[in-house]
Image 1: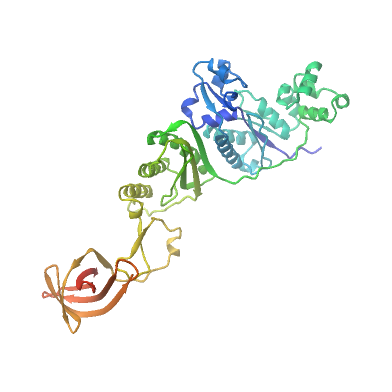
Image 2: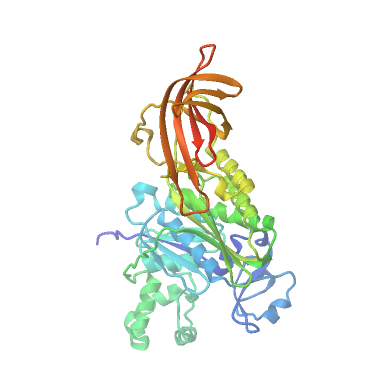
Length: 504
């Protein structure tokens, strides 16, 4: 008989509702905590941490019973936070294999990963399990991992691991011996099956595996055969992998309404850390972050931050969010916070050995954010000329960096530099035959050697602001021989001449 080519790693996270809530609340991890589920006054404990279990708390306890224990932190179950934590774990497991099946039951999260054929990528199963467990710990989740060539054996072994033993590797063919000491409670037995095995004196998987198959089927039917195969690590399984998209999202329901910005940023800081860890695990950086705040009264407040270059600098993102929320504060107390990030590619710049040191792009993003907070969103950015003949027609658009390489950018023809004057300066012009002959600018008189123009434009007759101007390009020469090239405009409505620009 050829050895099995199947190999599965089962990731088991017990008390997952409690762990999902505490991963973004590290200050509560060292205190007894319970998670309540249900409508008041019928709430019951659905999950709890180790500190609470040491005090004697158990599942199915009511609120009245929990109140009899001192210094116990009570949380309401949050399905949204559990979904976010589950998504983070699925993404973490997906870094080792794209084939993942969810076998979660009750308060435990169980992810089975098909790791057959990954030895050349991640090494032997012991190394893969250790690396996977380390990444899971960075997400704030305590878990255990069992590896076996049988799907159901890996699930049972992961559920039966103790707190001290976080990793268990079972060689092919030794599943029955590894499963033998485990309690029957590992299996999902019906009340009738549990009672039957209790009456027979069967308490472990090894005792169940030792029962004769024919007599067991005669008394319990095909369900008995299936349970015996489970106990022996021989039950086959049709793998059904998940199909989940890669999304970077974190959510937390606040324990009490928050109005202070500092308290909000403390929570956002922890969420940003998790987003950056998840993005870095897939060799991504954060291109944009959208913060969605659930406010009192049912309103939702959303802000999006998009720096010029993608980055995984947590302090940069925190500062940009601070400046943005400080300039645009929500109008009510905050009940929940959700962060959604858009992944981007890393940007690497190779400088020459003797090139001058350039300022970091992150400093430019923070500077622009500070400027926008002072002058307003519509007054900071990059000037974009409008397709209009109106003088000074432009708009402000957000500052962005082109994704094209310098070699891909179209080459612009060489033109003389034109320095616009803001504001325009008044000049005195003498005309001969309706053309400029001399000009006085900044208390200096110039003779006009060449005059090009006029170029006339008018418009906006449909609006309250009318405009009409006449533009001339002039070559001037002073008495000392100095030459000046300039652009002058004439306001035809008020018959005023002004210096608009100087040519280099």
